[in-house]
Structure formats: structure tokens, C-alpha cells
Length: 585
Image (cartoon, rainbow, N blue to C red):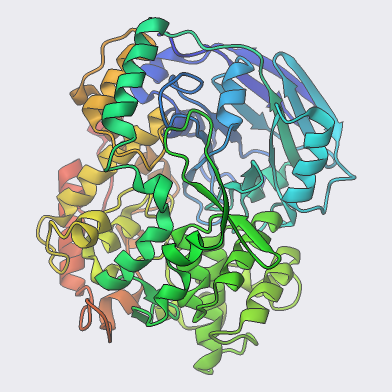
């Protein structure tokens, strides 16, 4: 098929060598690229039970057939490995320009294997690969690291790096690029750090061949007008995800003080209007048609964003309403290379534990100064920071308070309280990488659109399945989450690029294959129904205020939703993928 470079770059860090091989096109037809194809490679090549922080784990950068083409919102890079935070399959995506540079350098994917004997970075310029000492960069933040490397290689080179959090192998560490873009969940930065790999610089001077370039350009221009820069999508440019603050507060799903309640009377101090008043610029990713990036500056605090997850996590969930503190939290996390969702989740748990007298972490709700100070302790694993970076699951096992440890499979919850959106609870529970809103996002239907009753189990297994199908193929293509295109449009653009005819049904089948394979990976690592759950707080404690006041998810209703989800996919009551399905993969 066209659209692919038909080349994988393998980098052996143990002996500082590299080789290339053809992309497995049989797999590409079945899994496309991005999330799906990356998971296929990792599934086939990793030994079950491998330690995620050992040299035997692998780290893969994966593009897709639309990467580097005019297709809108197609500039993201998928990064795949086994998660140090959860032990599950882990795929993340990162915006910016890195994916396009990988493709223009001539590769569909880059696989990193083994471990450097000392800190280093890899320079990739087309077919020229260099292994370079990074002892002078080790210990530096991602922002300084990227600045140094940009000065050396030029701004037409993309840079992916880790901060001190990744170097210290924290399960909440990220991989950074374009200063403020992150592959941010599940400890992907720790995998890179475990390989002594501080950074990767990539410059590509090639191109991508599609089936009919003139036809594709004409059609993409039409798609941009009719299906991208439209009312359904333009919110990403005008407001971005901070627009969700009001919707979540009004809908009763904005977490407050470690999910002990929802709604915050001070929400207007950190809503979209407040951020717009402090906006200092705009930015978009490569091949972007929407330009969601907002540069926000208040005092000496500056970041691209903050996005809703960071706002809600460092804001109301930590009992803080000061926007400057939230922006500073975002800035420091980005530089240190830490996931803002997991970092704020650990801090809010510690605040509640302290206030309830279960264990004194020395920080309480609303403590703006310590919120920032503790980030540096966490990155260095010093003092109380060494506990906080364990994640809430491990902290609860050590100190108690398991009911208030908000996670699924060890990954801290995103910032939507599932008691106000029951299907969101199911989505967290069955997500392949642990608590995650990027696998299925039913809050959009249950709360924002109010098209489905939120406080019922009826049909929720099928709803979560349908939305998971959509995201599985979307992130395999690999499209930005913010473009609300349909499966039919995905098939159309795939056909334009590859010259092979794809249908909506093909997209559906590919998505199912991806979901089954991710589950099969986790299944062989020992995950099953016992792990598809949510904290007892969600099942036992009712919300006290807001639109969802009085709500919890009764255990029986949760199990009903889970049973339906398994049934739709054809899995067993224990959540196992049958051998008959595995053989079809």
C-alpha cells in the first residue's frame, strides 16, 4: 500500500548499532499504524512477564499511512511499550511535529531495544544515525534540554526528551516534545530513562508517496471546509479543553478535593474565559487544521495550555482555585517530565490522607506553595516525594485509604467523576492502559449532549464499546482526538492515501482487532475481570452536591455494565478473550 515508507528502523542500544527492515505489511493491513500496529509489534516481540524497566522491554515510535500527508489532524506520533505504572500494554500519543519528521526521515516506525551503557541521545537525520554522549544533559529539565539540542541541530529538527522524572524511573513520567507536548501516561518516560536515553533528535528531508497526490490535495481541501473547520470542531481553536470546566461543573462531574465531591463555587476563576484573558499566543501541530494550542502566561508562570485535565487536577481536585498556581503546576510538570494527571492525583490523595489523619504527608487541600514545591521532591524521589511518585495504588497499599485512592489498574483517574457519568466509570475500568478517558469518552453523550440518561446501567456496555471502536481505529490512523470525523470519513481518507479501497465496515473490523489484541496482551500478563474495577468510593459514597448529588454507581449496576461490555465483544464472564477470537487475529 502507498502512504507507507515500508521501513522500520531498529536501534540496538546495547551495542550502539542499527538496522532497517521492511514494515510488516500484512500487519499494516490489519492494524493500520499508530496504536494498533504498534501494539501488534510489541505483542509479538515482548516476552510475557518482562520487567517494564529492564533492557528487555522495548520502546516503539509508530506513525501511520496518513502521517506527513495533507490529511488534517494527522501529525501525532504513537509511542508504545509495556507500562511501568500498571504492567499493561501502554500506548501514548504526542502532538507537535515529531511524527512527520520520522516519516520524512524515511521510516514508518523506530524500535529502541536494549540499554545504553551510559546516558546518551540518538541523532537521526534520514539514514544517518549517531549515538552521542548525554552526560552533560543528564539531570536537566526537558525545556533546557530541548533548547540546547535545538541550538545545536536547528529548529527544523524535532526533539523528544525526558526530564529528571524519566531519568529517575518514575511511573508518572512523560516523554516531551515541542517543549509543551507530552506522551504523558503510564510511565512511558521511565521506559526511555531505563534505557539511559535522554533524547532523540530527528530530521527528515524526504516525502510521502500517496495514490494520487493532486486528487488527495483537492479532496482534503474540501474535507477541511466541510468536516474539519466546522462548528462541531472549531471549539478546539476558540476555547480548547478549558471549555470543559463549565460543562463538567454544571454536569456534576468536576472532581473536588480528591473526588470527595463534585462542583466548585470558584470554577469561574480557572475557566476558559479566565485563560483567554491571559492568552499570549496560539500554536498548532504539524498537519493541523484546528490549532488548539494556547500559550498562557500569568506572572512568571507560562505553559501551552493548561488543558482541562491539568486545570481540574491541580485546581478543584486539590482544593485550589488560583489560575497562576495551576499554570505554574503545568509548567513545572512539563519541565520535570511528569504526567499532570497522575501527579495531581497523588497530591490530592496525600492531601485527603493528611486531613483525615490517616497518614501525614505534610500537605493539605489548598496549599498552593507545597503543591509546586512537592513536584521537585517527587522528580528527585526525595523525602515525601519518594512516596508520592509510587502512585496512589502503591501509596494506599503502604499507608491505607484504599477507598480514596482514585485509580484503575494503578493508573490515576482522569478528571471526570463517574458517579455523574456511569459509563465513564466502566470506561475507566476496562481501559487497556488503566484509568483513562482516551479509550472511550461517554461523558460527551451522558453529560455534555445529555442524549443518554447518565445514572443508569442500561445500554452502557454497548455505548462504551461503540466509543472504544471509534477511538481504537482513530488512534491507529493516527488522528488527533479533537477532530470529530466518522468511520466513513476515516475510510475515505485511507483510500485516498493508500490506493486500497477501505470501507466503514473495514474500519470497524480493524478497531475490534486492536481492542482484542490489547486485551490479549494484558490477559497474558494476568489481568482479567478482577482488575476491571473502580475504587469503592465510586461504588459506595454518594455525591453531596451539584447536578449528580445523591449519586453513586451501585455494585450490581456496575457489574451489569461490565457483563454487557464483555458480551458485546464476545469475551467470557471473566473478561477473557476466547481462543477462537485470538486465532482469528
